[in-house]
Image: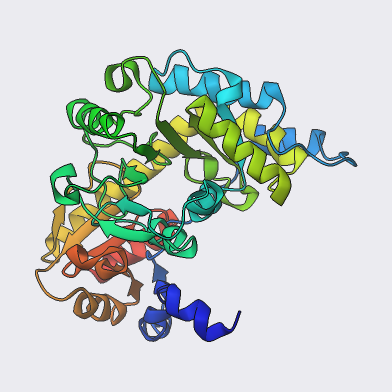
Amino acid sequence: MTRSRVSSRLPDFPWDTIAQAKARAAAHPDGIVDLSIGTPVDPTPAVARQALAEAADSPGYPTVLGPTPVRQAAVDWLERRAGVTGLEADQVLMTVGSKELIGNLPAQLGLGAGDLVVYPELAYPTYEVGARYAGCEVLAADSTVAIGPRNPALLYLNSPANPHGQVLGVDHLRKVVEWARERDVLLVSDECYLEFGWEAQPVSVLHPDVCGGSHEGLLTVHSLSKRSNLAGYRDAFVAGDRAVVAELLAVRKHLGFMVPTPVQHAFAAALADDTHVELQRELYANRRAVLRKALQRAGFRIDHSEGSLYLWATRDEPCRTTVDWLAERGILAAPGDFYGAAGAQHVRVAFTATDERVEAAVSRLV
């Protein structure tokens, strides 16, 4: 396939469009404060590093599904931290990070031309990219009413949401689950920020108050990248409807999507430990608080931002103008139009930078 054909079916990679702003911010005498990407900067927890080292002698191939104890760690975590009941290990499948799963999901489910994939109006670009990659039709919609009479093959939710941090409540989630089941629509909930609710309590679609105790027609996607500073390990999982998980497993066996054995052991060890998560939450809560105050003092309004690792900030002007204003002060933020037309007057400000860089940003926003 020629490059031009690939380019015509996929949008531009969004971060390429802020290269000039990044260069301008990097020219600041005290260096750039990059708040455009939510990449972890704090140490990987010792419990994960120790488990990785202990499993380092792994000469054989890993399995695509993952060992039962590893998948059971995911089951136990969902019950312990999210109140999910009735889930079993064969309803869990390891993935090479959550972005990989979302990017490949429509194709691996056999969707293509004529199938409709719906994702939120403000959304991480991979939902759309994965659907277009499979040849599907796409629609950005925040309500089932906006979808219209046509039944999608796949409907994405994201709560706490990227980029704007909105947290969907139990009643809202239950109504969407009921709507999807009535129409035989697969509902996929991206819950990779589930541990990070600040002004609202995130809820999984697999919680019995939402799904009625049945996981039929539902998948949830979870990642340790943010929760445990394991972005470099590429370990995540999808869980839910047993039949859909089995279908994905069959396809992924043929394609060789395998999480390395040492990484799987690190995954299980990190999921079993909550202490490092609470410590990380404290770090993020402090960074969030000082950045929010500084942005508001500088004339920004913060919308939503009840959860996730971002502040959804606006000065009620075009987002690229705001990006340039921040870049002049050595701060790089993500323009809201990365995530859809509804973000055209917002910027996404990550609070995953170090304490030192966050303080630098605060001093420049005075």
